[in-house]
Image (spheres, rainbow, N blue to C red):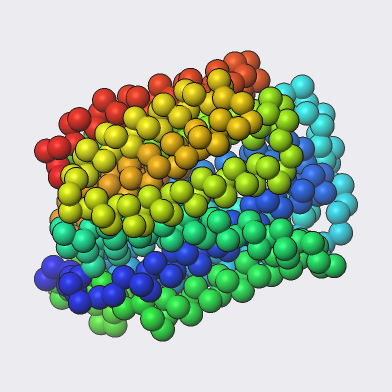
Length: 433
C-alpha cells in the first residue's frame, strides 16, 4: 500500500511554527559562540572548524532522517530530530558549568595557538549531535510538500522561508538582551533549550502526520530493533529483500534531480563564500563594529521576510518558478560582485538586492524540488538535497576563509560567478515546473 497523503486537509501553521521555533533557538546562540570558543581555549581557526562541524554531521544525518520520514512518517522523525537538538543544548549547559582546565596546548603554523579543554570538547559534541539529528529542515520541507497542492506549493515554501528568516531576526536580538544579564551566556543557552522543548511539544500535540507509514508484506522477517525504538508499528515486518530504490544512485535517475542537486550545491557554496568573507570585510575594510554587523544581517533577514511572504504570495499565480529562480540568482550574483566596490552606505543597497533575490529564488527552487519524485521518496530527496547544501557549506566555510586571506574582497567575485552559473542553469528548469 502506498503512503497516505492527506495533504489537502492539513493546516500549514504548525509546521511553520516548528520551523520558526527551531531557527529561533539556533540563532539565539550564534552571536555567543565565538566568545565561548575563546573562553574555552580556542581561537579563530577553531571557531571556523566548529562552524563546519554542524554541516559535516548534517551531511551524514539528513539523508537518513529524510528516508526514515518516508518509511515511518514525518512526525516521528521531527520528534527525534528536535530531541537531538534538545540534548545538544544540555551539552552546551554542561560546558558552561564545567571548569576550564587545559588538557593539551596546540602550537601550529596552520592552526595557530590554542588549548583543548573539556568545555571546548563538549561544544564540539553538542554541534556534532545537533548536526547529526539536524535533518529537521529536510523533513519539514517534505512535510510541506505533502500538504501543498500545485497551486499553493510556491507560496507555502515562501512562508516556510519567511518563518526561517523571522526566527533569524528575533534570535540574535534576544541574545543581545539575555546575554547582558548577570547570568551571561547561560541564560540565552537555557532559553534555547527551553525553546527546543517547546518545539517538541508543538510537534507532539499540534502537528498531524502528513505521511503515514507504509504497510509491509506479512511474509517478511520481524525487525525487533525498530519496535524497541517505536519507529515501526506493532506486528509490522521488515521486507526480506533489500530496497535500494531510495539510494542516491536511484534518486539521481529521477528526471531533473541531477540538475536540481547541482543548483542546490552551488547555491550553498556561493553563500558560504560570502558568509565566511563578509564579516572580515566589514571589520577590516568598512571598519564596522559588532552592532553594525548585526544591523546588516537584520536588514537582510527583514527584506527576505517581505520577499518570501507577501511578495512571493502575490507573484505565485503570476510568475513561474523557473523565472523567479532565474531573476533571483541574477540579483544575488550582481549583489556579490558589487560588494567590493561599495562603501559603508552602499553596501546596504547590496544587501537589499541580495535579500530580494534570495527571497524569490530559494522558495521557488524548493517548490520545484518538492514536486519531483513520487510522494514515497520526497523525504529522501529532500534529505539528499540537504546533504548537498551541507557539503557545499563545509567546502565554502573552510575554503572561503583561506581564500579571503589570499584574495581579500575579490572572493566575492568568485561567489558572484557561482551565482551567475546558477542563473545560466536556471533556464533549463522551465520543463520541470
